[in-house]
Amino acid sequence: MTTLTNSVLRPSFTHDPFLTARLKGLRLLSSMMMFAGFGGIVMLLNPSALTDVSEMDLGVTRLPMPIALAGVFCAGLALQRWLDWQVRQLERRGWEQLLAGRPEEAIHSLEVAMSTGSNIVRGRGYYALALAWFRQGDYERALALGEKTTWAGRRRDARVCDAQAPALMAVILALYGELDDAREWVGRIRRPMFDETDHALLAQAVMLCREGRYVEAVKRIQRTVREDVPETDVGAVAVIHAFARSRLGGQLVPLKPGCVLPQRPTRGSEYEYLACEWPELAAFLRGEDAPAPVLDA
Image (cartoon, rainbow, N blue to C red; front, side, top):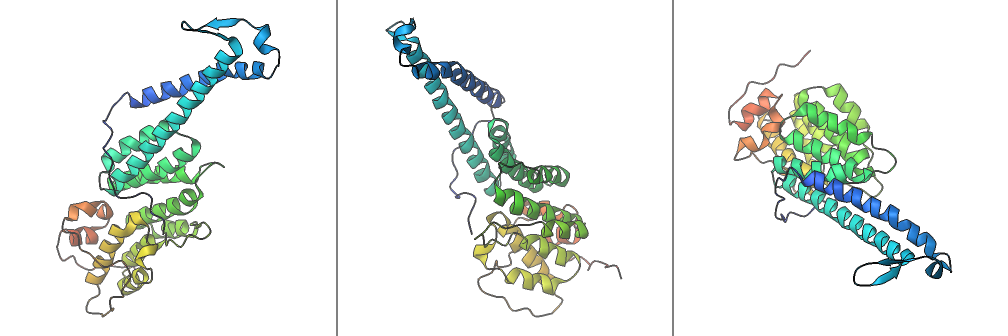
């Protein structure tokens, strides 16, 4: 399984309200420099360019105009590459903050990265923001952003758009209790070649629990080894595993080594986002014994 990022946190960006404007301004400046300097590149292709054109006074020296303009082009290109690096750092930092349980900070970093990044960055950003808002308990906003991820154009991250985003949509809809829609999104998951990650695990486990099929939910979770569980889902899968086992009613399902082990969180508030629309799970997280749900005949 490929993790999204390492667990080492970098120093967080200051919540600067003008950061987006500055990055956009620098992006515009780099484009203007490259546009203006491109003429110098064209002139340099003419062998007589250095003798037929005037020189530019740069204060400390004089240079033929084509060389000066070519320098402007190179400076603009360097500025653009530096901005791309800054955007990648912001995106990476957003993921680190998200995996560290700081979704509010992650939202700030990711929104800035999306506003100044490429189409690929925006596609990944929609998914990351959907996950961040999901962990804030805002299902509606998360669903809207998740759908935007799947609408990404030709230049996109296939793993995010075809596997991770549909899986997230399925999880949210399953937690909502919209099981038919959740199954439809599970069916849309397309894993890239050589990707062994079980993107559908959390959604399918939630659906089985919502239907009262707790034994099957436990077996479904135990069928996947820990290494194949998405890094972003491990904690939630452990909670759902513990919840399903708490509802077995005396039925024995041996614990299978190698899977995500059941874990009841010491602080239920850390996973409250899973229970916004699920009273039984909310009671479990509070440490209460909830009555078994009434299922439709």
